[in-house]
Length: 567
Image (tube, rainbow, N blue to C red):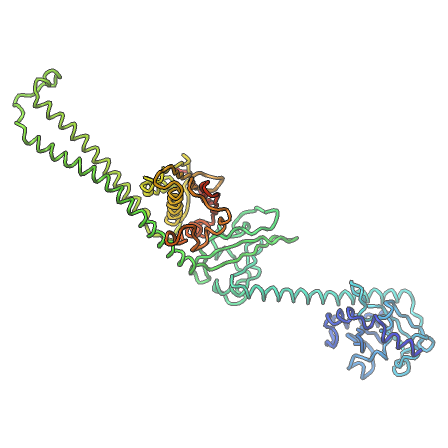
């Protein structure tokens, strides 16, 4: 009999590392008594009419009673015995129920010390088997006298053992979920960006530490808040913005720039990324907010520097454009003065009226001279007015180009903007080639940051001039075309040239700050970076490039949303 006990104590099942790990993960060993388990042992004692009932957990050295009813002292207090005093270890070893009607007559347990020390004569135990097959211990009933355990009561015990196992596994699952939740919260709190999860109604379900700090809340204060209080409609999830659209698969929307509002009403510039979270229940969305106020200040200063550089490049051409009309104005003004002197030196016209008959006119040379001079003065004055108008156009275009950024979106006519840019840059095509503009007749008005968009297009046109000059030199032959057209609900602007082109291997780098394909001292590497910032960061649009060496280049700017047809 002693050999059977030793075999059970050292069996592979009792000492199995996987089982012991699973038992340890329950965190029930040495834990305090709990009503959730005590109610099961009371039920066992009542339904099986047994004086003792146990929830026994068996490790490699002892059995621990998570719950007990009817044990004498000191076991009622210590709630454990060594394996030498355990029937339950046999259940762990075999993985099967153990039913003992009379321990003194049962070879499996008759030598166990509890038979004589505690008077254990009848025992019925069912394994606590986890869903992954590990037997952690037993739910058992004990009697101090021999008895027959009827099948109905054994079935009740088996069912209750299943319920206890479910309780154990649910607790383990709950702890795992709590651990994963705590880890997720720690990860979210470690992120430098503000992260919020909002429900289908647009209310915050959870938010990280940075979100609370960014929006001005005490820890936990954001939960339950309406996200629409802090973000404009275009930066909200569809449901929160009033849309019922539902995508087929989770996908993050491109970051959109928005003016966010803190709890105290102060505002800041933010990039907002929205990602759907698909679940079996109502949809949720994850919002990531980045406070980009500082970046926008830096980018704004870079944009102003680029504007000053572009104006400097344009200045020489503009001076030439103004100089030509001024020379024409000066020449015609001199001629008008000479005409005035000629008229002053003529004798007075006769007192008698001159007939308007052509034959009579020809008979009076003085009247004919007056009319000829008057016609020439009219032509000269008309030419002067044309050139003054041309100078006015140049001055207005320069004024628009130098207008400071307001930081506000405005609705502008793209027709006028591109024509002004063409007027300022056309002088640079005297030797490089030609400039053509191709504007959709019903081009929509667009809500944009006008100074930034104007600078982006100007940079692209000036880059195109450099490209065609690099390829064709002073011989000419270059061509640049600026197109603008509607594309679904977006505005597309293209700058196309037949210049030197850009190696496809460099396409992904050309928009990086300080990267340039020009020679040393010829470029700062900020022009295209400014274009990318203005279109992508400010307008939430896209910039694309199609080019190859000596095959020209096409830069396309796409600005989505908020388009209105011209009246």
